[in-house]
Length: 405
Ligand SMILES: [Zn+2]
Image 1 (cartoon, protein in one colour):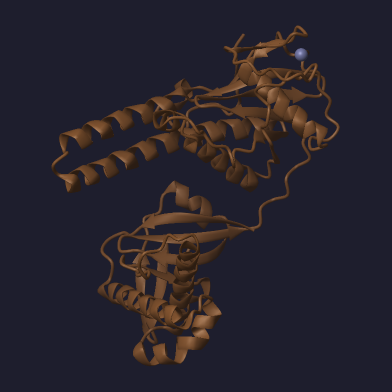
Image 2 (cartoon, rainbow, N blue to C red):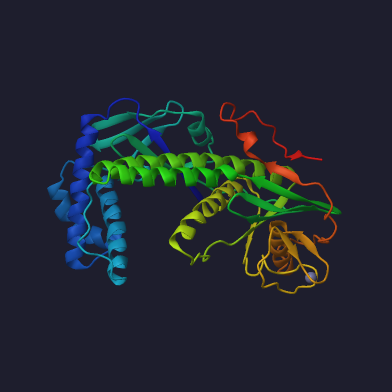
């Protein structure tokens, strides 16, 4: 079961009754946290048993389902708190400050056509929440395969979880192996009998990161004696950076996936979890792994929705190994990987060949055979490049990768 959360902004002001409900919900949550702390209970059911009767009296008007949700939110917070206590982190007992409330799927109704949420407050009193619905939201609302999960209400928006059983991945007939780098995905595409090196470039992501980093640094210097303003401005800067990077990563992922889908490929990626840079602080920032992990996250969830199979393999030695003779090169090299046996190849492409070999040695790509030397002189296929993402026409590109002679 895959779960996707969609954020809807509210059309117009929140009804005062809904606001009162959120305040009540916050009170109940904080009460449950206190009760749980006192009795050392952290599960939802435990909290229910412990405090339901008492709470029913304190909040006689609240819809019973909401009260159970409050216990669930409290249980989640208590679990986090306990974990942090174990690792020696927590300083003070947890407390919910922002206004929010959560409703389970039985506790609200959604008119999927009109985009109106019907939220019960108490017996006989319901509020209607009008949602702003865009084309993006339609994807979830119009697809009956998505069932409704929980709803989270915030003062200006609603987050709804949609659940779906993902389609079964197809049986692949080709492989797209990709090595993830700071500015590009480099790899090889292999079909029965033929293959080619491929690339999806996103150099602007690193440039955007650098630019926003410089800007934040300047802001901090300029507002050195006003930390509140500095913080607010930096936060806004960070949000902008996030949005701009995210937009580009989605573009890259969409192009790579539509290529894979049209060729019925399995995608091989390196497993980035557990990889750490232990260099200087500046190096750490410059080579931040976040965009790469985020790109993988996007590719993985979109692939799951589309039934595109994905394999993740351990990237150890993938940048240092020769795929022909298997020897490991310890010296640093330039853009070209060279081996004593005579093999040479672009260093990133070489890494992707090694990833593919790892996957294939574990029998993960089926019976597909490939010869690393075969496509050495083939033309590079461009899956994505920044020119494809002209902001003025976000949907104007063809689905296929463009072959450059
Ligand atoms: Zn070699």
